Length: 203
Length: 208
Image (cartoon, rainbow over all chains, first blue to last red; front, side, top):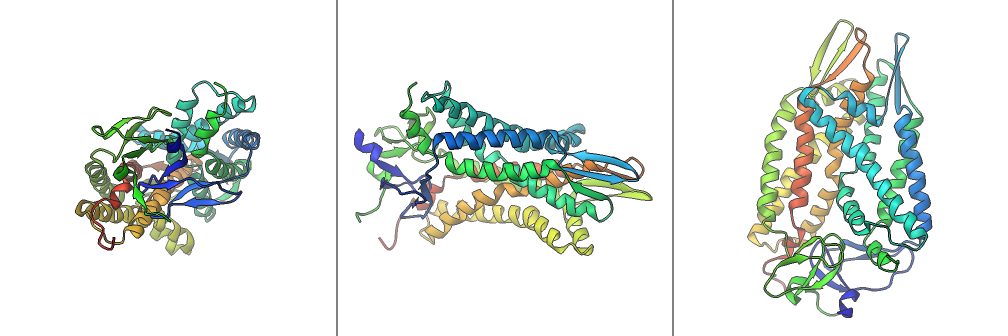
C-alpha cells in the first residue's frame, strides 16, 4: 500500500506519475497533457496564517467602507460589495442578487473563515475539528469565488459613470485590490499538499 | 523514462477532490475516498449527458439574456432600457473603446467560446477522437480559467443600480435580462465542471 503514496495521478488525463521532490519555486507538470500537478512554495503554515489574517482584515474593510461613491447635485451615494448585491433585490431579479451576494461576499468570507480555522489549529500542531469537511468545502468553493471579477467590475463602473457624474474610488476599492492579490496567493498555497500536511498533525 | 500509463489501465483510481491514489476494486468503478470521503469515479458518470444538458440550458438562456434589457437608466429628461449589446455600443460611441472591448470580451466572447469549445469537446470525446488531444486538454483548462469572468456585467449592473439612486436626477434599476445572463454564467460553469477531461484521452491512439 505504501507504494501508492509515491504515485501522482493527473486529474486532467489520468496519467500515472511517480512523485518527485520539488525545490522551491518548482512546478510539476503532467508529462502527457502538461497540466500543473503540483507547485512547491517555501511558505510555512504560519506565513499562510498571516496572509489569511490580512485577507480577513481587508475583507472587513472592503465590507464596511465604500468601494465607489458618486456625487450629483449635492447628493452623495456609496456602494460596496454588499450594497451592490442588495440593490438588485427586486422581485424575481433577486435571483441575480443572490448569486452575486454568494460569489462576491459569502463565498470569499467562507473561504477566509475556513482557512483561519484550519491554520490556527495547525499553529499549535493540531488538526482542526472538521478538517476533512473544511478542505473538501474549500475545493468546491474555489471556482465560485469572484472577488477579482468584482474588482474589475468596479473599474468598469468607475469609467462608465465618470462621463456624467463625479465618481471616486473609496477606501474599499484599495482593500478589494489587496484582497484580490491575497486570495490569489492563498489559492496557490491551498493545494493538495494540504492533505499530506494534515496527516502530519495530531487529531 | 518508462512508458506513460493511464490509471484506469493499471487498476488505479485517483480522488478528484484530494488526489489520493487508491487501488481500484475490479468489479466496481466507484467508491468513497478513504481520506476525504468524496465519491471516487474512474470517469464521472454520465458526464457527457450532463454537460450537454447544462450547455443546452445555457444556450437557451443566452437568448433572453441578450434580447431583454439588463438595466434601465433614467436621467433628467427621460430614461431608457439597455441591453448588453446596447451597452457595449454605447461605450464604443462614447469613445471608451477599451471598456467596450472588455465587456464584449467578458459578455460575448467568453460565453460564445464556452458554447463552441464545450460543444467541440463533447463531440470529439463521443467519437473517441485522437485529434489534437493535448490542444483539446489545454482548451478545457482555458475554459475553467476564463469561465467566471462573464459575471462582470452582473457586477457592473449591480454597482450602477446601487450608485444611481437620485430619484429625478439619475436613477438605475436592474431589468430581467440580467437574471438570464447570470443564469447563463452559472449554467455554463456547471456544464464545464460536469465535463470529465480524462475522457479526452479515452479511445484509440493512432501513433502509439
